[in-house]
Image 1: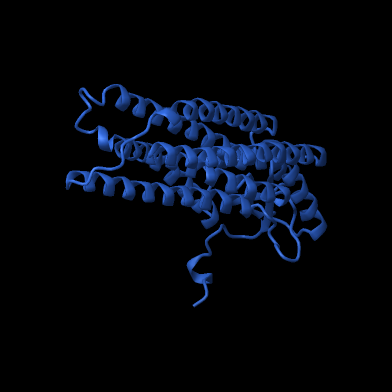
Image 2: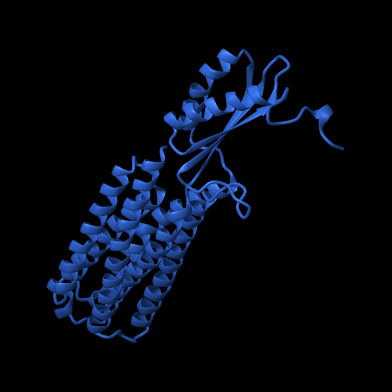
Length: 319
């Protein structure tokens, strides 16, 4: 990746995240206000999702400024892990909000079943809220998706924020449809559940999104734990290493690929089969890095000169 491309990527990320930050703050305030005016926990929850979106956009802007910076005295392996940390804890915070919303909804349903009906819904403030917030979510999703595509589909921050905006829009639309159905049929087929219809909608929405957020949490945690990258990345990396190593004349004993944010760490366990100098191996390593970055943008290659693969033979292992 050239310096110009890196600069353009950072500018696109910063611009998209800045707009998303203020857009999410607007939606958070509107959601909490409309939720209290209408006595709707579903709308309050929607606003809290947007509040998390505001905080994550704020943090994402700071992370994107340094995520591609190289190693320094403070971070000898660079700052790529910050993106994985961001994904992990954003997903974890959303899971926490979902669990809180589920607990609150179940409590409301239990109270209703034991003779304590909740405050009645006020449908007036809901119409304008769903129209305005739904349009805002779509606009933020389109902006993030367009910026992510322009960065070569490399930014994990923009990809995650685009998906989060899409889910926020779906949650808003689903809540609107559900509350609209309760309003239209509150004296008909839904009369029995109408008083807790808002809590039932919250439960359904939480069940819809919890798998998505848990998957994001596991993916981010796996990157931080150093889990092997997907098989297609490993196949591509192996295919990319072969020409330069074959030309050098040695044997590739083993290799590993780990994904960390938008970067890939490729380790090649290489036996040159002959006496070599440090300068020769440096030159080979640099060529491998250039080749790998053409195949996997943002990747780095560690050329490890050794007679053994990643696991030491039993007779050489320390006692």
